[in-house]
Image (cartoon, rainbow, N blue to C red; front, side):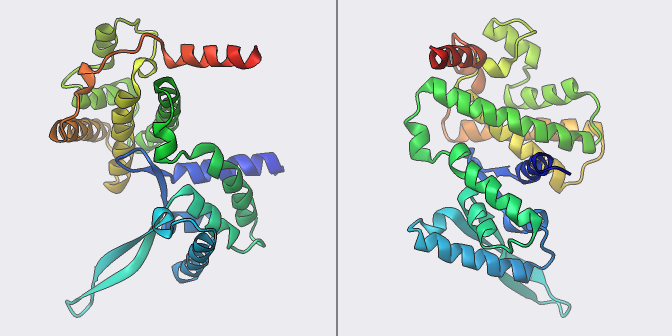
Amino acid sequence: MDEKKLINITEENFESIKHMDEDGIEFWYGRELMKVLDYSSWDKFKKIIKKAMIACENSQVSIKQCFSQLGKTSKMPNGGEKYVEDFDYKLNRYACYLVAQNGSSKKKTIALAQTYFAVQTRKQELTRKEYEQLSEDEKRLYTRKNVRDKNKYLFDTAKIAGVRNYGKFNNYGYRGLYNGETAKDIANRKGISEKEDILDYMSSTELAANLFRITQTDEVLKNKNINNEDEACNTHHKVGQAVRQTIKRIGGTMPEDLPTPAKSTKQIEKEKQKKLKA
């Protein structure tokens, strides 16, 4: 297999295990990263994570910002319980890069990971401060890309869960988040044709709500090992409702009440490309 194909596979592997938190910030779990990097022993992999944490500290970057230790309580045979303090780690992209840098370069997966994360760390991850400094159009483009990428993974997960009618599956999620509205209803309300993608006509705030719906549905489908289309659709609906309730609880604006931008993200992207060419 040539190098280009290996790099493409590497990217697919890392992006397929990427998660999003409630603020739309990406992260990886150490145990999932371990498997992708071709390690079989968690104890050995923890040592690499510890080295990466030292490297992080030496680079004067906050360890807490990059590495979050996740504990777990396990039941013992005698009926007691044991708390494992470092059962797993929550890592940002820079932490993954440092882990790869401290892994065995003899492994092909490590060598590819070192290249991949070195290029992607700065290219794809924005800090919250950087994000807030973006214009609304730039925020829309950035979040729209995240939504597009995560939707691909959701549909892959949905397929494994038994979904065959993706239009139906999508509408269940929208109906949960938009108080009963389907994609067609949303398009009509926004005044756009059915041929246009409603996600292209959403503000950064509305896109962020949908990003949360998408990532959390993906998580739940995987965690519950759902393998039935109706159950998968109902799960998508429940997650959509849960996101809606969260918005309501914190005093946010309901997605259907947010203004529709005059330009689609595709239009903004085209204008951006014209300026670059000029």
